[in-house]
Length: 289
Image (tube, rainbow, N blue to C red; front, top):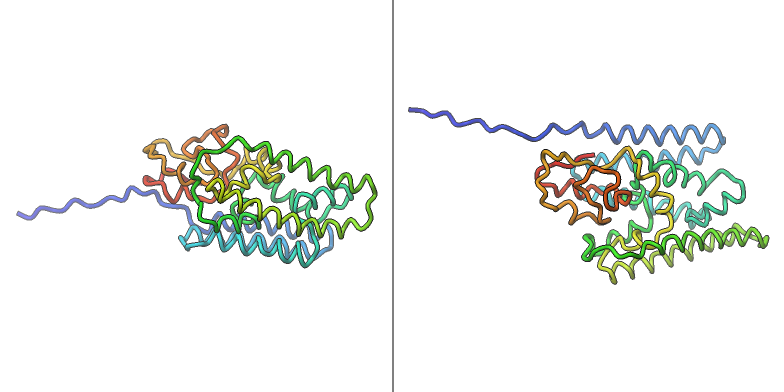
């Protein structure tokens, strides 16, 4: 008697087409690029935001298609562009000091627009995606060997507020004292500030055995990022019917987020950098964007 073999059933959900999210992101940045170009009559904005949007979209597309190292490719494509071309060659201070400088100058350009798009209003849509895919400090820190936090987070987050206040007082004092050649000072402070950031970030990574220690305790930009990230449209969600509570997602999270929790009030919920390591490691594929 011939016994028919039972047919295998595929319980995996059909994934959405991998080009949808990249296309939406590209269209968003292209809209920003064209709007700023037409409103300011400066072709730089067309190139700048088209370049960043194209890099981000391409990186996400490659990641969705399981191309190894795609996130790091994007980090270096955007991070090195902003650090070397904008910061060093074009003398644009893209650090928080540059934001205060252009804001106090009453000039709606450079760092002010960058912060508005990437770090103040942008996180309402994509959370702290900038930290995961475009930060020129993190692009170096993520290459260090401590990709998974070895120890629990320390109560040192207050340091970022001190750095935030110092940067504000530094630039405001320059304006109050009417110091000459402010643009030259801003250019120098960008170079010096980045050297200090890298030195402190690398040191903390080795001391705390955590590549992202700088992001958690020192980086002042997170003060802008955290409030809007709370309401982020794009975020990692868990399907509780599939989750097996294995804890693998939380263990690999570089930012100590309580991943298997859909509440916006979850532990370190505004710290997610959308690196998607949690989705990669989830055995039952219970996590999704």
